Length: 67
Image (cartoon, rainbow, N blue to C red; front, side, top):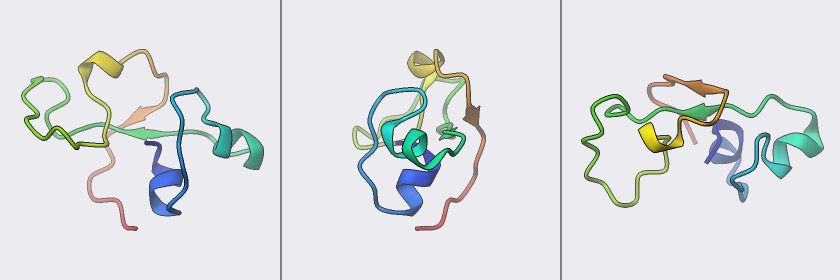
């Protein structure tokens, strides 16, 4: 899930940029998981990017992202 879609409760796809960001002319940025480098994320519902998602160009260490 990209940051914009997450904050606005929108459906995000795996595209780069996602459809929602492309339609709005926004830069599609995806938040890195806290355990991005370590690969130790054990949350199966984690919506952030992990090491296996590193093919995305706009990964950011975003910290807390408000809804």
